[in-house]
Image 1 (cartoon, rainbow, N blue to C red):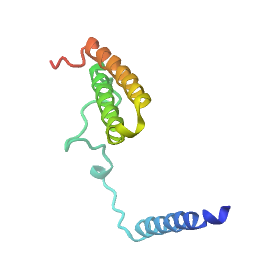
Image 2 (cartoon, rainbow, N blue to C red; image 1 turned 180 degrees about the vertical axis):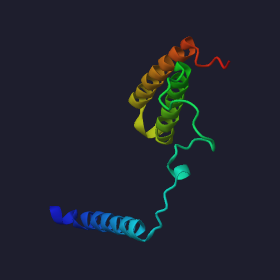
Image 3 (cartoon, one colour; image 1 turned 135 degrees about the vertical axis):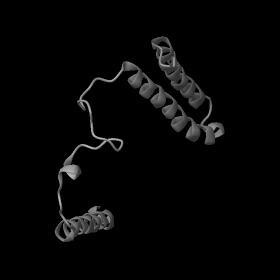
Length: 118
């Protein structure tokens, strides 16, 4: 049985070896000229003026959750829409339950004020 997986394992081994060889060559042959500017934290082209571990506003996380809700909805609805006629009524109910859960998440976001852009 393991003979069927031999080509895949061989391919993974060759890819890992090739990656390690390229990284080693880059490390050995590449120039290394550190300076204060290169080792400083970098963000948006200017030096950092505050601590990087500051707290974010909760609205940032609410917008992230909102994006995940819509991203999941689209990612799961496209394959279902392609095979909607073949899968039958049970799949329709499953999708409606899925959309109901996402709608609950959306209402939660709405009530928390994630859609209020101030």
